[in-house]
Amino acid sequence: MGVKQKSKSLKSSKNKLSNTFLQLEVLNGQAVVDQQFEPFANKVKSLGFSNGLTSTKIDVFQINIGKLCNQTCAHCHVDAGPDRKEENMSRETLEHCLATIKAYKIPIVDITGGAPEMNAHFRWFVEECYALGAKVMNRCNLTILRANKKYYDLPEFFAKNKVEVVSSLPYFTKTRTDSQRGDGVFNDSIEALQMLNEVGYGMPNSDLVLNLVYNPSGAYLPGNQEELESEFKRQLKRRYNIEFHNLFAITNLPISRFLDYLLETENYESYMTDLVEAYNPATVEGLMCRNTISVSWDGFIYDCDFNQMLDLKSAVKGNHISTFDMEEYLSRKVVLNQHCYGCTAGSGSSCGGEIS
Image (cartoon, rainbow, N blue to C red; front, side, top):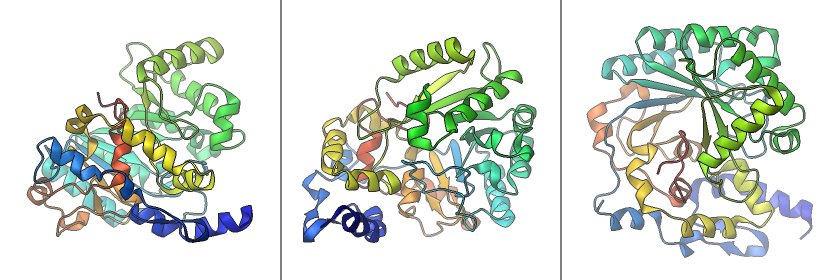
């Protein structure tokens, strides 16, 4: 089978691959069955969670406000892009989200996408959350600040509403950043960081928090977060006079475009082996699925952002935000699968970086 045929075969089975992780049908009828790896659920049971992993409390309300994005990044687990115009959260669903945040006094609202700023109701939602007294986090790809004049004032808007900005920056060099996120992304990202610095974001002793996110560019685990942060700070300050507060190192999970990449480069088995062999039981207590609710653009509820992208809905009867019940959610069992090894490998991985 040629390269083009191979690619078509893999893409045609993409949905099945992404949604099961149990039987990966690939070339010439051969199968990669990741049941060859011990089920992640067994790891959890061996730690004393005999009835499965459960929530502790809900501190973080994470909301994927839409898959529309001005970028098409090679390893995007959301599969976001400029063509995802229909998958954007409505005002009605956002109002249900606000009602839940208010009713249960959830302290942190973590807004993600796509490029969340492209949702027509983004600014209204941020202002409403801020008015409720919630800490608002926005996961910004940086280039949106330079994409169109209507976004140029976002740094001031963020500052007015005390938004914590969490920004994606694959590396502090143009070559590695553009290879993962597209031509011109690095230069636009640097300009955007400088815009944020100008209004006080990321500066020493500033309460305008600016954090960066690092994802590896290939089929390997991230390095030590503390060391990466130190190097990023040194290089960005020396080269571009840029300041930021923290760097989050996040492991790439075998989902969506990154799964496609692993399969097409025949790295799936070796990458999964690395994740399984790096399993760290000390990370399980701090997994984000234990203190986070993840809501999709259409209002369905998931245990984490990664489960959301695999359409593995929370195991509750009312798994839509319009019928959300905190007591039911706290008593549920977290939905686990083999991709969970990615969150427990090495020092662990969450939307806030390392766990342990």
